[in-house]
Image (cartoon, rainbow, N blue to C red; front, top):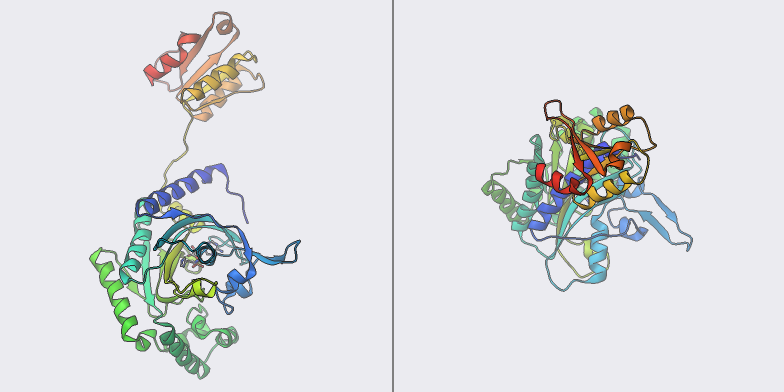
Length: 407
Ligand code: HAM
């Protein structure tokens, strides 16, 4: 877990603002769910996944309820839907917030990390899958990221997937796997496909692919998704061995990979269909699809691509107070009330020390309040840039109108 300091929070806010704008313009409303839920909400993510078996921050609260900090938000959104039963479908929501997974921290992998995402409940249409993927694509483009690769796959209908899992089990049981590969196989054969270990590589390469197990509906759904992406000019690669780390997916799944990040942490975001999850959480049978994009990783990718440049926002005015009285307090408050961003010097420090601070603030103007100014009911307005002209003495009552005229 880490602190996000002011230099980074500005980028953080910008990313969130871009996402809110894009989601809002596509008709999504924001949902805010609790950080903490009953453990049962998250066990539905899949009892064979690392997220559930190894990474949950779960504990008993003072009422002896078994709860967990959320490791992701899709299950929470589905729990919320099942609880509130919104009448108007589809339910289109977006979210932003922190999640917690007890993982091995490294660049791009943290124990507390943020996601922005969307979920749509109540629509089965493959055209929605295209729209959802396109929204994430649009978001990366709006941020200015260029090195993003979209990878798609379909896990088929539940029966297709079940038949595929059995075929994988048979294949891997008679293949050479590492000890960890064998352990994964015992829990979930699909996850063996995700192995990055060299000792598993040959078995993974020779494994059957899901496409051979699609029912005609699943094949049709996936074909529609692909032709929709082509129609929108969104480049993608079909990766038949893409499986995701969560168990609730059916049919379309996708991942966005960053070109500049280390391969173990290069997933900038991902999502897919999870028809069945709402039902598992006590709601009516409801199709669902969505994605979550990792904020921390996306910002790392932005940094690698130099997307943000110098984004420090200087204040408009820096008030230098050489008197130490109430005058600078009043002037600073007036400036802010008039819509100027303003900072000031404190502690009655020397003029020289405060001018240094004014310089560091990068404000284009300093307003100097000295004994003489207080006595004559005026202030000095000094342009900070070398070639921006001379300082001027301005009557105190004219200060705001003077600044408005000259800014
Ligand atoms: P996920 O693939 O587990 O999917 O996470 C989505 C993204 O969150 C990842 O691609 C990554 O960028 C970021 N992320 C995950 N774990 C970490 C971590 N430890 N540190 C930093 N970033 C991380 C989900 O969470 C699903 N709920 C997505 C979804 C929404 N599916 C359908 N709707």
